[in-house]
Length: 317
Image (cartoon, rainbow, N blue to C red; front, side, top):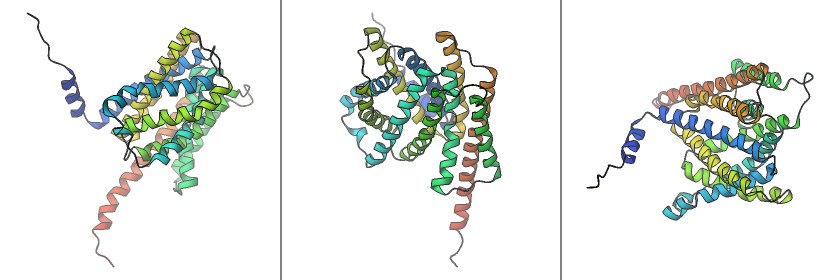
């Protein structure tokens, strides 16, 4: 007699839903850090034979194909949105940043690229002052100053030549800083699937032209790796978006530093690349500064939330 076993998926879903949001967010961020690191190493590997601009386009178009089964089973339900313009803006920003970042991966060791990518929160803090009119106290300005000092520790201008890849990463981080603000705004009303789906759609459109400009015919092996890059990248983006949706960034950001650990281990294994101690020190300074800024922002929002009910309860003058 055949023995039927109970499907474990409903039980796992119940455990997932019962877990605290912070734990769910941390797990999603850890998953994202692993998958992003693997994708970056694969991009560097494939870039030996395929131009980075073409890799970016194929990663995006295959990412759309990954969503095809979801579209077939749910129709266009999770593509319904009233914020198509904001999705398009995010797509432009991500397209430019991705093309710059993938090109950097082809030119510069993975761990160095990862370390410099941690400058994005610093740029986001500066942009919030310039464009949103936020006011920072001295501690936040010190954190920003130290963060960019950490960037100089990694780059070491005047001591080692300024390479194109490193400059591209810093530029991509600046653009990503704007994209992160857009993602946070979108996550208030849009699901992770909707945000990721539109990201892949718009990225495919906006990266097509640069890809055609440098197009080469990939080998069968490279086609296989390109599909893997797309699948891994889509999973990583979903996990990151869900992590930010589950809880406050301050709860999950410390685990984003794991990307440097995975990137270092994978870079050593695949390419024999080992970052020096100075790069690690600079990366830790940059990351710590970015985390402090996120923590201060969370504290300010929480304090504002406590003051709001008190103000609302006062009688009108």
